[in-house]
Image (tube, rainbow, N blue to C red; front, side, top):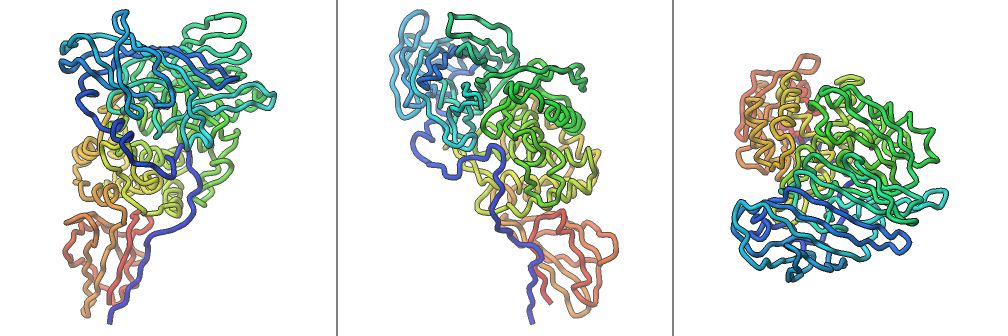
Length: 551
Protein backbone atom coordinates (compact mmCIF):
# COMPACT_ATOMS: atom_id res chain seq x y z
CA UNK A 1 0.00 0.00 0.00
CA UNK A 2 1.36 3.42 -0.98
CA UNK A 3 1.19 6.45 1.29
CA UNK A 4 2.47 9.88 0.26
CA UNK A 5 3.40 12.63 2.64
CA UNK A 6 4.50 16.01 1.32
CA UNK A 7 6.54 17.57 4.10
CA UNK A 8 7.33 20.65 2.08
CA UNK A 9 5.79 21.72 -1.19
CA UNK A 10 4.97 25.01 -2.79
CA UNK A 11 3.75 27.85 -0.63
CA UNK A 12 1.27 30.18 -2.27
CA UNK A 13 0.77 33.51 -0.57
CA UNK A 14 0.64 37.17 -1.41
CA UNK A 15 4.15 38.61 -1.60
CA UNK A 16 4.89 41.54 0.61
CA UNK A 17 6.16 44.01 -1.94
CA UNK A 18 9.94 44.12 -2.15
CA UNK A 19 12.24 47.03 -2.95
CA UNK A 20 12.63 47.65 -6.67
CA UNK A 21 10.78 44.53 -7.88
CA UNK A 22 10.38 44.36 -11.64
CA UNK A 23 7.12 45.31 -13.27
CA UNK A 24 4.36 42.79 -12.68
CA UNK A 25 3.68 42.44 -16.41
CA UNK A 26 6.27 42.69 -19.17
CA UNK A 27 5.51 43.08 -22.85
CA UNK A 28 7.81 41.10 -25.11
CA UNK A 29 8.00 42.84 -28.47
CA UNK A 30 10.36 44.11 -31.19
CA UNK A 31 11.42 47.05 -29.04
CA UNK A 32 12.63 44.62 -26.37
CA UNK A 33 14.59 42.66 -28.97
CA UNK A 34 16.23 45.81 -30.29
CA UNK A 35 17.37 46.72 -26.81
CA UNK A 36 18.06 43.21 -25.57
CA UNK A 37 20.04 41.82 -28.52
CA UNK A 38 23.74 42.47 -28.98
CA UNK A 39 23.91 42.99 -32.73
CA UNK A 40 27.10 44.08 -34.54
CA UNK A 41 25.73 47.63 -34.45
CA UNK A 42 26.12 47.55 -30.67
CA UNK A 43 29.19 45.35 -30.19
CA UNK A 44 31.22 47.40 -32.67
CA UNK A 45 31.93 50.06 -30.03
CA UNK A 46 32.90 50.01 -26.36
CA UNK A 47 31.66 52.89 -24.23
CA UNK A 48 34.43 54.56 -22.20
CA UNK A 49 32.91 57.82 -20.94
CA UNK A 50 29.66 59.79 -20.91
CA UNK A 51 29.06 63.41 -20.12
CA UNK A 52 25.33 63.75 -19.57
CA UNK A 53 24.36 67.41 -19.41
CA UNK A 54 20.62 67.90 -18.83
CA UNK A 55 18.25 70.69 -17.77
CA UNK A 56 15.08 69.77 -15.87
CA UNK A 57 12.12 72.13 -16.37
CA UNK A 58 10.05 70.95 -13.43
CA UNK A 59 7.03 73.17 -14.02
CA UNK A 60 6.54 71.77 -17.52
CA UNK A 61 7.91 68.30 -16.74
CA UNK A 62 10.28 68.74 -19.65
CA UNK A 63 13.93 67.87 -20.07
CA UNK A 64 16.56 68.91 -22.62
CA UNK A 65 20.20 68.09 -22.85
CA UNK A 66 23.29 66.65 -24.47
CA UNK A 67 25.08 63.39 -23.94
CA UNK A 68 28.67 62.96 -25.07
CA UNK A 69 29.50 59.37 -26.09
CA UNK A 70 33.24 58.66 -25.90
CA UNK A 71 34.02 55.19 -27.21
CA UNK A 72 36.67 52.86 -28.55
CA UNK A 73 35.85 51.00 -31.73
CA UNK A 74 35.95 47.22 -31.39
CA UNK A 75 35.59 46.61 -35.14
CA UNK A 76 35.65 48.71 -38.28
CA UNK A 77 32.20 50.27 -38.67
CA UNK A 78 30.32 53.17 -40.18
CA UNK A 79 26.99 52.60 -38.43
CA UNK A 80 26.01 52.02 -34.81
CA UNK A 81 23.00 51.84 -32.53
CA UNK A 82 22.26 53.71 -29.32
CA UNK A 83 18.98 53.89 -27.44
CA UNK A 84 16.44 56.56 -26.50
CA UNK A 85 12.72 56.08 -25.91
CA UNK A 86 10.75 57.13 -28.96
CA UNK A 87 8.66 59.71 -27.06
CA UNK A 88 11.83 61.80 -26.65
CA UNK A 89 13.16 63.81 -29.59
CA UNK A 90 16.64 63.34 -31.02
CA UNK A 91 17.27 66.94 -32.00
CA UNK A 92 20.73 66.42 -33.49
CA UNK A 93 23.66 64.02 -33.53
CA UNK A 94 26.98 65.79 -33.91
CA UNK A 95 30.30 64.28 -35.01
CA UNK A 96 33.42 66.37 -35.59
CA UNK A 97 31.31 69.50 -35.70
CA UNK A 98 28.85 68.18 -38.29
CA UNK A 99 25.36 66.74 -38.05
CA UNK A 100 24.98 63.03 -38.75
CA UNK A 101 22.04 61.32 -40.38
CA UNK A 102 20.11 58.79 -38.32
CA UNK A 103 17.01 56.61 -38.35
CA UNK A 104 14.77 55.47 -35.51
CA UNK A 105 12.93 52.23 -34.85
CA UNK A 106 10.97 51.95 -31.62
CA UNK A 107 13.48 52.98 -28.91
CA UNK A 108 16.58 52.35 -31.03
CA UNK A 109 18.52 55.03 -32.92
CA UNK A 110 20.77 54.06 -35.85
CA UNK A 111 23.55 56.51 -36.68
CA UNK A 112 25.48 56.71 -39.97
CA UNK A 113 29.04 58.06 -40.01
CA UNK A 114 30.56 59.68 -43.11
CA UNK A 115 33.66 57.47 -42.98
CA UNK A 116 34.62 54.11 -41.55
CA UNK A 117 35.69 54.27 -37.91
CA UNK A 118 38.81 52.13 -37.71
CA UNK A 119 39.14 49.34 -35.14
CA UNK A 120 40.88 50.53 -31.98
CA UNK A 121 40.18 54.22 -32.50
CA UNK A 122 39.06 56.41 -29.60
CA UNK A 123 36.33 58.70 -30.88
CA UNK A 124 33.17 60.50 -29.77
CA UNK A 125 29.86 61.99 -30.80
CA UNK A 126 27.17 64.08 -29.11
CA UNK A 127 23.43 63.51 -28.95
CA UNK A 128 21.16 66.52 -28.41
CA UNK A 129 17.72 65.55 -27.18
CA UNK A 130 14.59 66.88 -25.49
CA UNK A 131 11.03 66.07 -24.57
CA UNK A 132 8.61 65.03 -21.90
CA UNK A 133 9.90 61.83 -20.29
CA UNK A 134 7.60 59.06 -19.14
CA UNK A 135 6.21 59.75 -15.68
CA UNK A 136 6.45 56.87 -13.26
CA UNK A 137 3.01 56.32 -11.76
CA UNK A 138 4.25 53.81 -9.20
CA UNK A 139 8.00 54.22 -8.80
CA UNK A 140 10.18 52.27 -8.42
CA UNK A 141 8.12 49.38 -9.87
CA UNK A 142 7.47 51.27 -13.08
CA UNK A 143 10.16 53.48 -14.56
CA UNK A 144 10.58 57.11 -15.47
CA UNK A 145 10.45 60.44 -13.64
CA UNK A 146 8.78 60.54 -10.24
CA UNK A 147 7.35 64.07 -10.07
CA UNK A 148 6.40 64.88 -6.48
CA UNK A 149 6.39 67.79 -4.04
CA UNK A 150 7.36 67.80 -0.38
CA UNK A 151 5.13 68.91 2.50
CA UNK A 152 6.18 72.52 1.90
CA UNK A 153 5.12 72.37 -1.72
CA UNK A 154 8.66 72.38 -3.09
CA UNK A 155 9.65 70.11 -5.99
CA UNK A 156 10.77 66.62 -5.06
CA UNK A 157 11.76 64.72 -8.18
CA UNK A 158 13.67 61.51 -8.85
CA UNK A 159 14.41 59.08 -11.66
CA UNK A 160 14.03 55.32 -11.37
CA UNK A 161 14.31 53.04 -14.37
CA UNK A 162 15.50 49.52 -13.53
CA UNK A 163 13.93 47.01 -15.90
CA UNK A 164 12.39 49.66 -18.13
CA UNK A 165 15.80 51.03 -19.06
CA UNK A 166 17.89 54.17 -18.67
CA UNK A 167 17.02 55.24 -22.21
CA UNK A 168 13.60 56.16 -20.83
CA UNK A 169 15.17 59.53 -19.95
CA UNK A 170 18.66 59.83 -21.47
CA UNK A 171 20.41 58.56 -24.62
CA UNK A 172 22.93 55.76 -24.07
CA UNK A 173 23.97 52.31 -25.15
CA UNK A 174 21.27 50.71 -23.05
CA UNK A 175 22.61 47.23 -22.44
CA UNK A 176 24.06 45.96 -19.16
CA UNK A 177 26.98 44.20 -20.85
CA UNK A 178 28.77 47.48 -21.56
CA UNK A 179 29.31 49.63 -18.49
CA UNK A 180 30.81 53.04 -19.04
CA UNK A 181 34.21 53.38 -17.31
CA UNK A 182 33.49 56.81 -15.81
CA UNK A 183 30.95 59.58 -16.19
CA UNK A 184 30.18 63.25 -15.58
CA UNK A 185 26.56 64.04 -14.72
CA UNK A 186 25.64 67.73 -15.03
CA UNK A 187 22.10 68.67 -14.04
CA UNK A 188 20.52 72.13 -14.11
CA UNK A 189 17.59 72.62 -11.73
CA UNK A 190 15.62 75.58 -10.35
CA UNK A 191 17.45 77.55 -7.68
CA UNK A 192 14.99 76.65 -4.93
CA UNK A 193 16.17 73.02 -4.98
CA UNK A 194 19.36 71.05 -5.61
CA UNK A 195 20.28 67.92 -7.55
CA UNK A 196 22.05 64.90 -6.09
CA UNK A 197 23.46 62.31 -8.48
CA UNK A 198 25.99 59.50 -8.39
CA UNK A 199 29.62 60.02 -7.48
CA UNK A 200 31.08 63.20 -6.01
CA UNK A 201 29.96 66.81 -6.43
CA UNK A 202 32.88 68.55 -8.10
CA UNK A 203 31.32 71.90 -9.00
CA UNK A 204 28.18 74.00 -8.60
CA UNK A 205 27.51 76.50 -11.36
CA UNK A 206 25.05 79.38 -11.17
CA UNK A 207 23.51 79.68 -14.62
CA UNK A 208 21.16 82.64 -14.15
CA UNK A 209 18.65 83.93 -11.64
CA UNK A 210 16.51 80.83 -12.14
CA UNK A 211 18.80 77.80 -12.53
CA UNK A 212 21.85 76.21 -10.92
CA UNK A 213 23.85 73.35 -12.44
CA UNK A 214 25.33 70.55 -10.30
CA UNK A 215 28.26 68.58 -11.70
CA UNK A 216 28.73 65.05 -10.31
CA UNK A 217 31.77 62.95 -11.27
CA UNK A 218 31.56 59.15 -11.23
CA UNK A 219 35.07 57.68 -11.16
CA UNK A 220 34.08 54.02 -11.31
CA UNK A 221 32.25 51.90 -13.89
CA UNK A 222 28.48 52.27 -13.59
CA UNK A 223 25.58 50.51 -15.27
CA UNK A 224 23.05 52.70 -17.03
CA UNK A 225 20.00 52.12 -14.87
CA UNK A 226 21.95 53.24 -11.80
CA UNK A 227 22.47 56.76 -13.16
CA UNK A 228 20.04 58.94 -11.25
CA UNK A 229 18.73 62.42 -10.60
CA UNK A 230 17.39 63.37 -7.17
CA UNK A 231 15.99 66.87 -6.95
CA UNK A 232 14.74 68.37 -3.70
CA UNK A 233 15.12 70.86 -0.89
CA UNK A 234 17.84 68.79 0.73
CA UNK A 235 20.25 69.25 3.59
CA UNK A 236 23.49 67.29 3.70
CA UNK A 237 25.00 65.59 6.72
CA UNK A 238 28.40 63.98 6.21
CA UNK A 239 30.54 61.59 8.24
CA UNK A 240 33.47 59.23 7.75
CA UNK A 241 33.32 55.47 8.06
CA UNK A 242 36.63 53.70 8.74
CA UNK A 243 36.33 50.69 6.52
CA UNK A 244 38.61 47.98 5.14
CA UNK A 245 40.19 50.34 2.61
CA UNK A 246 40.44 53.26 5.00
CA UNK A 247 38.23 56.35 5.37
CA UNK A 248 34.97 56.22 3.38
CA UNK A 249 32.94 59.40 3.03
CA UNK A 250 29.28 58.83 3.91
CA UNK A 251 26.66 61.47 3.08
CA UNK A 252 22.99 61.72 3.92
CA UNK A 253 20.73 63.95 1.85
CA UNK A 254 17.30 64.34 3.42
CA UNK A 255 14.55 66.91 3.09
CA UNK A 256 15.07 69.81 5.46
CA UNK A 257 11.88 68.84 7.29
CA UNK A 258 13.48 65.48 8.21
CA UNK A 259 16.82 66.73 9.52
CA UNK A 260 16.03 65.33 12.99
CA UNK A 261 15.68 61.78 11.65
CA UNK A 262 19.18 61.31 10.31
CA UNK A 263 20.37 59.33 13.34
CA UNK A 264 18.23 56.42 12.19
CA UNK A 265 20.06 56.42 8.84
CA UNK A 266 23.46 56.73 10.48
CA UNK A 267 22.96 53.76 12.80
CA UNK A 268 21.66 51.47 10.07
CA UNK A 269 24.31 52.55 7.58
CA UNK A 270 27.21 51.90 9.95
CA UNK A 271 25.82 48.48 10.86
CA UNK A 272 25.25 47.62 7.20
CA UNK A 273 28.71 48.62 6.00
CA UNK A 274 30.32 46.73 8.87
CA UNK A 275 28.41 43.52 8.13
CA UNK A 276 28.82 43.63 4.37
CA UNK A 277 32.50 44.48 4.37
CA UNK A 278 32.96 41.44 6.60
CA UNK A 279 31.03 39.10 4.30
CA UNK A 280 31.68 40.58 0.84
CA UNK A 281 34.93 42.55 1.12
CA UNK A 282 35.55 46.30 0.89
CA UNK A 283 32.77 48.60 -0.27
CA UNK A 284 33.39 48.68 -4.06
CA UNK A 285 33.21 52.44 -4.64
CA UNK A 286 35.46 54.23 -2.15
CA UNK A 287 36.44 56.75 -4.86
CA UNK A 288 32.82 57.80 -5.30
CA UNK A 289 31.75 57.64 -1.65
CA UNK A 290 28.49 56.32 -0.21
CA UNK A 291 25.26 58.34 -0.11
CA UNK A 292 21.68 57.85 1.01
CA UNK A 293 19.29 60.23 -0.73
CA UNK A 294 15.72 60.61 0.51
CA UNK A 295 13.11 60.03 -2.19
CA UNK A 296 9.33 59.97 -2.42
CA UNK A 297 9.49 56.43 -3.83
CA UNK A 298 10.55 53.46 -1.73
CA UNK A 299 14.11 52.89 -2.87
CA UNK A 300 16.59 51.85 -5.53
CA UNK A 301 20.23 50.77 -5.57
CA UNK A 302 21.57 53.77 -7.48
CA UNK A 303 25.33 53.29 -7.24
CA UNK A 304 26.93 55.54 -4.59
CA UNK A 305 23.63 57.46 -4.32
CA UNK A 306 21.09 54.99 -2.93
CA UNK A 307 17.49 56.16 -3.13
CA UNK A 308 15.85 55.87 0.28
CA UNK A 309 12.12 56.16 0.99
CA UNK A 310 11.41 53.82 3.90
CA UNK A 311 10.22 56.67 6.13
CA UNK A 312 12.98 56.28 8.75
CA UNK A 313 11.69 53.04 10.24
CA UNK A 314 12.79 49.44 10.61
CA UNK A 315 11.40 46.63 8.52
CA UNK A 316 9.90 47.09 5.09
CA UNK A 317 7.59 50.05 5.72
CA UNK A 318 7.29 48.67 9.25
CA UNK A 319 6.61 45.07 8.19
CA UNK A 320 8.60 41.83 8.25
CA UNK A 321 7.85 39.59 5.29
CA UNK A 322 9.55 36.61 6.94
CA UNK A 323 7.11 36.61 9.85
CA UNK A 324 9.98 35.85 12.23
CA UNK A 325 10.47 39.28 13.78
CA UNK A 326 14.11 39.44 12.69
CA UNK A 327 13.20 41.73 9.81
CA UNK A 328 11.96 44.40 12.23
CA UNK A 329 15.35 44.97 13.83
CA UNK A 330 16.85 46.93 10.92
CA UNK A 331 15.86 49.20 8.04
CA UNK A 332 15.12 46.97 5.05
CA UNK A 333 15.82 49.57 2.37
CA UNK A 334 19.22 50.56 3.73
CA UNK A 335 20.34 46.95 4.07
CA UNK A 336 18.87 45.61 0.84
CA UNK A 337 19.83 48.49 -1.44
CA UNK A 338 23.31 48.68 0.08
CA UNK A 339 23.72 44.96 -0.62
CA UNK A 340 23.32 45.82 -4.28
CA UNK A 341 26.50 47.87 -4.16
CA UNK A 342 28.28 44.51 -4.15
CA UNK A 343 25.79 42.41 -6.13
CA UNK A 344 24.30 44.45 -8.96
CA UNK A 345 26.65 47.42 -9.04
CA UNK A 346 30.09 45.91 -8.43
CA UNK A 347 29.09 42.60 -10.07
CA UNK A 348 26.59 43.32 -12.85
CA UNK A 349 24.68 40.80 -14.97
CA UNK A 350 25.46 41.16 -18.68
CA UNK A 351 21.88 40.42 -19.69
CA UNK A 352 18.58 41.20 -17.99
CA UNK A 353 17.88 37.45 -18.07
CA UNK A 354 20.45 37.03 -15.29
CA UNK A 355 19.05 39.65 -12.94
CA UNK A 356 18.70 36.76 -10.48
CA UNK A 357 22.42 37.35 -9.81
CA UNK A 358 21.63 40.82 -8.47
CA UNK A 359 18.52 39.93 -6.55
CA UNK A 360 19.30 36.48 -5.15
CA UNK A 361 22.58 37.48 -3.56
CA UNK A 362 21.15 40.77 -2.33
CA UNK A 363 18.14 39.07 -0.80
CA UNK A 364 20.56 36.71 0.93
CA UNK A 365 22.61 39.70 2.11
CA UNK A 366 19.70 40.52 4.43
CA UNK A 367 20.20 37.17 6.15
CA UNK A 368 23.95 37.73 6.37
CA UNK A 369 23.30 41.10 8.01
CA UNK A 370 21.22 39.27 10.63
CA UNK A 371 23.90 36.59 10.94
CA UNK A 372 26.62 39.19 11.62
CA UNK A 373 24.69 41.25 14.18
CA UNK A 374 22.51 38.56 15.80
CA UNK A 375 23.30 34.92 15.02
CA UNK A 376 23.45 32.27 12.31
CA UNK A 377 20.33 30.62 13.71
CA UNK A 378 18.46 33.93 13.41
CA UNK A 379 19.58 34.35 9.80
CA UNK A 380 18.46 30.85 8.85
CA UNK A 381 15.10 31.42 10.53
CA UNK A 382 14.71 34.58 8.44
CA UNK A 383 15.50 32.74 5.21
CA UNK A 384 13.12 29.92 6.10
CA UNK A 385 10.36 32.40 6.93
CA UNK A 386 10.77 34.09 3.56
CA UNK A 387 9.59 30.92 1.79
CA UNK A 388 5.99 31.98 2.32
CA UNK A 389 6.36 34.47 -0.53
CA UNK A 390 7.78 32.04 -3.10
CA UNK A 391 5.44 31.35 -6.01
CA UNK A 392 7.40 28.85 -8.16
CA UNK A 393 5.63 30.36 -11.16
CA UNK A 394 8.52 30.34 -13.65
CA UNK A 395 12.34 30.05 -13.72
CA UNK A 396 14.52 32.65 -12.02
CA UNK A 397 16.45 33.05 -15.26
CA UNK A 398 14.75 34.81 -18.15
CA UNK A 399 15.37 34.36 -21.91
CA UNK A 400 18.55 35.93 -23.24
CA UNK A 401 18.65 38.72 -25.80
CA UNK A 402 15.10 40.02 -25.44
CA UNK A 403 15.40 42.38 -22.48
CA UNK A 404 13.40 40.17 -20.14
CA UNK A 405 14.08 39.01 -16.59
CA UNK A 406 12.87 35.83 -14.94
CA UNK A 407 10.46 35.26 -12.06
CA UNK A 408 10.28 37.67 -9.14
CA UNK A 409 11.13 34.53 -7.13
CA UNK A 410 14.71 35.62 -7.90
CA UNK A 411 14.52 37.47 -4.57
CA UNK A 412 13.17 35.03 -2.00
CA UNK A 413 13.84 31.72 -3.75
CA UNK A 414 17.27 33.02 -4.71
CA UNK A 415 18.06 33.78 -1.08
CA UNK A 416 16.88 30.31 -0.09
CA UNK A 417 19.15 28.81 -2.76
CA UNK A 418 22.24 30.55 -1.38
CA UNK A 419 21.41 29.42 2.13
CA UNK A 420 21.22 25.84 0.80
CA UNK A 421 24.59 26.24 -0.90
CA UNK A 422 26.05 27.45 2.38
CA UNK A 423 24.53 24.41 4.12
CA UNK A 424 25.98 22.03 1.53
CA UNK A 425 29.45 23.57 1.75
CA UNK A 426 29.16 23.28 5.53
CA UNK A 427 32.16 25.48 6.21
CA UNK A 428 31.42 29.13 6.93
CA UNK A 429 35.03 30.20 6.46
CA UNK A 430 34.93 28.77 2.95
CA UNK A 431 31.52 30.33 2.30
CA UNK A 432 32.74 33.76 3.38
CA UNK A 433 35.86 33.38 1.22
CA UNK A 434 33.63 32.54 -1.77
CA UNK A 435 31.46 35.62 -1.28
CA UNK A 436 34.50 37.85 -0.92
CA UNK A 437 36.20 36.07 -3.81
CA UNK A 438 33.27 36.72 -6.12
CA UNK A 439 33.54 40.45 -5.42
CA UNK A 440 37.30 40.55 -5.93
CA UNK A 441 37.41 38.27 -8.99
CA UNK A 442 34.56 40.10 -10.73
CA UNK A 443 35.39 43.55 -9.32
CA UNK A 444 33.67 46.18 -11.49
CA UNK A 445 32.85 43.55 -14.11
CA UNK A 446 29.82 42.16 -15.91
CA UNK A 447 29.02 38.45 -15.58
CA UNK A 448 26.55 35.76 -16.58
CA UNK A 449 25.13 32.51 -15.19
CA UNK A 450 28.17 30.45 -16.17
CA UNK A 451 30.65 32.88 -14.62
CA UNK A 452 28.98 32.60 -11.21
CA UNK A 453 28.49 28.83 -11.43
CA UNK A 454 32.04 28.14 -12.60
CA UNK A 455 33.53 30.27 -9.84
CA UNK A 456 31.37 28.60 -7.19
CA UNK A 457 32.24 25.10 -8.40
CA UNK A 458 35.96 25.81 -8.47
CA UNK A 459 36.11 27.68 -5.16
CA UNK A 460 34.02 25.14 -3.23
CA UNK A 461 35.30 21.95 -4.84
CA UNK A 462 31.64 20.88 -5.17
CA UNK A 463 29.75 20.54 -8.46
CA UNK A 464 26.63 22.72 -8.13
CA UNK A 465 25.79 22.50 -11.84
CA UNK A 466 22.58 20.50 -11.41
CA UNK A 467 21.52 22.47 -8.33
CA UNK A 468 21.79 25.72 -10.31
CA UNK A 469 20.00 24.18 -13.28
CA UNK A 470 17.05 23.02 -11.18
CA UNK A 471 16.59 26.07 -8.96
CA UNK A 472 17.41 28.78 -11.52
CA UNK A 473 16.46 27.37 -14.91
CA UNK A 474 13.34 25.42 -13.85
CA UNK A 475 10.39 26.61 -11.83
CA UNK A 476 9.68 23.68 -9.49
CA UNK A 477 11.61 22.41 -6.51
CA UNK A 478 13.06 18.87 -6.44
CA UNK A 479 11.24 16.16 -4.53
CA UNK A 480 13.11 13.66 -2.38
CA UNK A 481 11.47 10.26 -2.75
CA UNK A 482 12.03 7.94 0.22
CA UNK A 483 11.09 4.26 0.28
CA UNK A 484 11.16 1.98 3.33
CA UNK A 485 11.47 -1.72 2.64
CA UNK A 486 10.07 -4.44 4.87
CA UNK A 487 13.45 -5.06 6.46
CA UNK A 488 13.68 -1.46 7.67
CA UNK A 489 16.12 -0.43 4.96
CA UNK A 490 15.68 3.07 3.57
CA UNK A 491 16.23 4.08 -0.06
CA UNK A 492 15.95 7.55 -1.59
CA UNK A 493 16.36 9.43 -4.85
CA UNK A 494 15.58 12.84 -6.36
CA UNK A 495 12.69 13.50 -8.72
CA UNK A 496 13.42 16.76 -10.54
CA UNK A 497 13.06 18.53 -13.88
CA UNK A 498 16.84 18.73 -14.35
CA UNK A 499 18.06 15.50 -15.94
CA UNK A 500 20.32 13.44 -13.68
CA UNK A 501 19.73 15.86 -10.84
CA UNK A 502 21.95 15.40 -7.82
CA UNK A 503 22.21 17.27 -4.56
CA UNK A 504 23.42 16.35 -1.08
CA UNK A 505 20.88 16.31 1.74
CA UNK A 506 21.20 15.94 5.50
CA UNK A 507 19.18 12.99 6.89
CA UNK A 508 19.18 11.25 10.24
CA UNK A 509 17.03 9.65 12.90
CA UNK A 510 14.94 11.95 15.03
CA UNK A 511 16.85 13.14 18.06
CA UNK A 512 20.21 12.27 16.49
CA UNK A 513 22.66 14.30 14.41
CA UNK A 514 22.09 14.29 10.67
CA UNK A 515 24.55 13.00 8.08
CA UNK A 516 25.02 14.47 4.63
CA UNK A 517 24.27 11.96 1.88
CA UNK A 518 25.03 12.38 -1.82
CA UNK A 519 21.73 11.63 -3.54
CA UNK A 520 21.13 11.36 -7.29
CA UNK A 521 18.27 10.39 -9.58
CA UNK A 522 18.61 6.64 -8.89
CA UNK A 523 17.59 5.02 -5.62
CA UNK A 524 20.40 4.89 -3.07
CA UNK A 525 20.37 2.65 0.01
CA UNK A 526 21.08 4.67 3.13
CA UNK A 527 23.05 3.18 6.03
CA UNK A 528 20.01 3.88 8.19
CA UNK A 529 17.54 1.27 9.43
CA UNK A 530 14.23 2.26 11.00
CA UNK A 531 11.13 0.39 12.15
CA UNK A 532 8.92 3.25 11.01
CA UNK A 533 9.63 5.82 8.33
CA UNK A 534 8.42 8.53 10.72
CA UNK A 535 11.63 7.96 12.66
CA UNK A 536 13.51 9.69 9.83
CA UNK A 537 14.25 13.41 9.97
CA UNK A 538 15.22 15.34 6.85
CA UNK A 539 16.67 18.86 6.95
CA UNK A 540 13.76 20.62 5.28
CA UNK A 541 14.56 23.74 7.30
CA UNK A 542 17.68 24.58 5.29
CA UNK A 543 16.84 22.62 2.11
CA UNK A 544 13.92 23.97 0.07
CA UNK A 545 12.57 20.66 -1.24
CA UNK A 546 9.53 18.46 -1.43
CA UNK A 547 9.50 15.06 0.27
CA UNK A 548 7.56 11.95 -0.77
CA UNK A 549 7.57 9.00 1.62
CA UNK A 550 6.49 5.55 0.50
CA UNK A 551 5.83 2.55 2.71
